Each structure stands twice: as C-alpha cells, then as structure tokens.
Length: 505
Ligand code: MCA
Ligand code: AMP
Image (cartoon, rainbow, N blue to C red; front, side):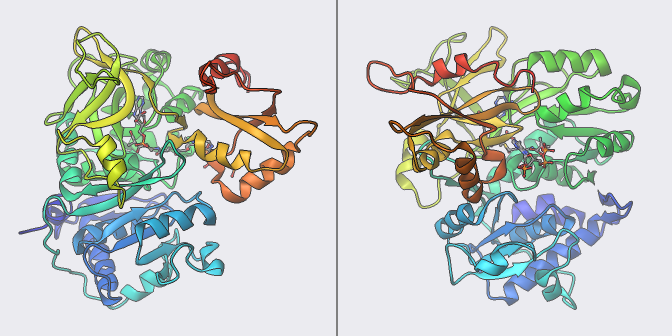
C-alpha cells in the first residue's frame, strides 16, 4: 500500500525549492518549506496520540499553516474536518458531537477557549492563529521536518465536510483519498494547469472550492498560488497582474465588473477565469467577455461529489451552462418519480456516478441509502437538462436551498428557529435575487393572533445561534402564507412576489 493522495499531490514536491505560496506580506513559502510544515504538524498530532482515522476539526482563519494542517492530516491518515469560521458555538456543537472529532483546532481568540469544546468534553483543543502562531505550532518546535506518509487505501477517508440537509440537520460528507485525487487530476488536465500557473486564491479554505478544487490542482501540477486571506477588491486588482488564473464564485466576478480599474489591459496576460459554487448569470458571462475578452469557464460541483461537469477549456464555453461531464464522471437526467432516464432535452433530476462521488454521510446509513443508490448514482437534488449539443443546463433545485455569495443556506434551519420565537406562529424563509450575493435570505413571519412580534428582538436571537451569513437580510410580517390544497406552503408564489425586493439594495 501507499498513500496515493499524499504522494501525488504533496510528496512529488519533496526537496523542491520552487514557490508554492505567495503571501500578502511579499514572502514566499516554497514547496519544500510547506512539506516541512506539514511533516511537523503530522508529528505533533501523532505525538498527542492521534491515530489514523481520527477526525481533526479545524475552525481557524486562512493561513499557510492551516493548509499545512490539511496536508498533515492526509499524510498521517487523519480525517480533516474544516469548519466555516463564521459558525457559532451552537452550530459547532453539532459538528463536533456528530463527527466525534478527537482534536479541535481553533483560533486563540475563539469562544471555544472560554466555553470548552462544545459537543465533546473529551476532545483536545489546540490553537492555530491566522499568523501561524498558537499551541499547535508550538508543539512542532524542534520536531524533525520529515514524516513517512501513513499507508492509506484509495477509499480511506481524507476529509469530512458538513453540508446542510433539507431537514435542517447537517450531514458529514465522507470524502475518500481517491475522491480527491481523481478529481484533482481530471480538473488539472481539463483546465490545462501546469507548473507555470500562478493561481489567484481568494476563496476560503473550509469548502471544496477553495480547499480541494483550487489547492489540489495547483499541487498536482506544481504551480503556485497568490494566497489572499479573502476577497478584497483592491488587493485582487493589485495582484491580478502577477497571476495567470483565478477561481471564484459569481460574486467575485460581479464585484470585479463593478470596478472601472478591471479592464482588458489589466487581464490581458491571464490564461483562465473559472466560476462555480452558484449559478453565473449569462449576463455576467457576456459582460465579462465584453470588458476583458475572456470567457469565464463555468463548472458544476457539490461537496458530496467534488466537480462533476465543466465547460471546455478549448471548445465553446457556453453562457448559462455548466458544460460536459468530466473524464470518468457519468451523469444522467432522470424522472424524479420513476428514476427512469429521460431523453436529451427533457428536464429532470441530475444523478452522478464516478470516482469523484463520496462514500456516504458520516453515521447516517439511511440518508446515504436514500441519496447514494446501489447503482453508484448519487441524486444531487439539482434539476437540469442536456441541450442538443450535450451541454448541461442547471435549471433549478429539487432541494430547498439558498446560495448566497457561494455559501449554502438551508431555509429549514432558519424556519425552525423563527418558529420557536415568541409571538411567531409560523414562518417561511426564501431566497430572492440580490445584486451582489446572487441570492439572499428573506424571512417571512406570521404572528400569533393579536400579537405583534418584535422583529429586532427576533433578529438578535437569531444572531446568537446562526452564523452571520445565514441571517435573513430582512424579516417581514404577513398575515398568512400561501398554501396549496394539501396545506403545503407555496414558496414559488412567495419567491415570485418578493423577486424584486432587493433590486435597488
Ligand atoms: C459574508 N457575509 C455574507 C456572505 N459572506 N452574507 C451572505 N452571504 C455571503 N456569502 C457577511 C458576513 O457574515 C458579514 O456579516 C458581512 O457579510 C461582511 O463579511 P465579509 O467577509 O467582509 O463579506 P464579503 O466580502 O461580502 O464576502 C462575500 C464573499 C464571501 C467574498 C463572496 O462570501 C466568499 O468568499 N464566498 C465564497 C464562498 C465559497 O467558497 N463557497 C464555496 C462553497 P456581519 O457583518 O453581519 O458579520 S460551495 C463548494 O465548495 C461547491 C462544492 C462548489 O461547487 O464549489
Ligand atoms: P455544496 O456542495 O453544498 O457546496 O453546494 C452544491 C450546490 O451548489 C449544487 O448542488 C448546486 O445546486 C450548486 N452549484 C454549484 N456549482 C454551480 C453552478 N455552476 N451553477 C449552478 N449551481 C451550482
């Protein structure tokens, strides 16, 4: 056995002094230095008594050290569990309890330091700050800068990424070593990445997009990344001249288009712009091409499947579509009622099969069986169709989901909280178009009879429990919700009614 994920992404750079991370400070971390960091974190975790298969939960800000912690988990056979830095203690409690994580790595300023580990009193805590300091890094001091990668089978777990469910309960998607490796190699080839690429990296590294798609491709091909702490328009415009490629959510591209400094001249040397995680409006694609001469390459993926389809690097990149299945990935459109495959041109549920598809939901065999069928096809919950030329169009979602600036928000989770507030009889949470975030959250509340709920108080309550990106941008009060004959709330009617709510925001 070997550890193919580690060997093919990280180990291949052993001893190389070529740049890997260009830092905002102007410094550079080369591949050999990065590997040394990874080896030391692996040694520190092993010394603490962690074993292959143990889950390491990390709620820390973006830094080279955090990326090295991911590499260290791959190298030592542990399972990396990155968590959105916006999650509140209430949210963390569930992830930590559900995953049974043995080690929690957090910022030294995190609330966890005062509350103790939520959800698992037996878990260990170490800190890792955005500047690379903290107790975890202290543990690595004086440690040798090498570590023999632990053998792993292709279907051993590399990462656990939580993705919310339509019932409001998050599910841990189990991603294997082969899921990550096969997808990185397929994308690197399809998008023509080479050791000469310099990727402008402004995405968070607690999701598939920034952590696996962006980072693993660059690792697989030996290029480097301009490693930004987040998306800051001025800094992006400043750094573009030094990059060859960029990956982002549609909000990145609409924000760039909103700035007059973003011109054809500024981007003339760029090789590739990739968009994903949310629908890129055809209008944005077209405006981008008019302004810069570049056609954004849009692709489609999910936490459970990594990337499924992509517009072509060399052929026509068609606005409003997500292209063709990646090499090795099978995709079909089926009738949601019968499961039968539908002919080209007809809309139905998108199902995916391939080495990219996850192993199941952590500790949830029934949910796994419901979505990951015995045939190997995973039911994505997205609705789409293939056009006459074989391009996939995503035309809707079978799942009740809002995507705001690339972050997924499940209305059920917010509705449950709203319903439990004083004076609230019931609620509906919907996504409505938003000029910056693509979609944003609108909360619609029906009060109990003769009660006028206090909107400010409800907002304050939500803030205590929910990560800020999930907060309804507005809460409104109505007398009743539209329902169909079966009594089900007609969210489509609400979405139509409030479609223009944020037009001038
Ligand atoms: C930040 N805020 C948001 C969002 N981001 N609110 C709604 N939607 C958002 N996306 C809130 C913060 O909580 C904060 O609230 C306030 O806005 C300011 O925070 P800041 O960080 O300055 O926000 P921003 O600059 O507006 O951030 C927008 C962003 C960011 C740059 C687009 O959201 C981002 O980097 N998104 C990328 C997400 C991503 O990587 N998704 C991939 C997952 P307050 O002031 O109240 O505290 S999907 C995936 O991986 C699948 C597999 C795929 O296909 O790729
Ligand atoms: P998640 O895995 O939770 O990050 O979100 C995956 C979901 O994001 C998919 O099921 C789609 O609904 C959506 N998504 C990702 N990429 C695209 C895209 N290019 N166009 C439309 N929706 C997308």
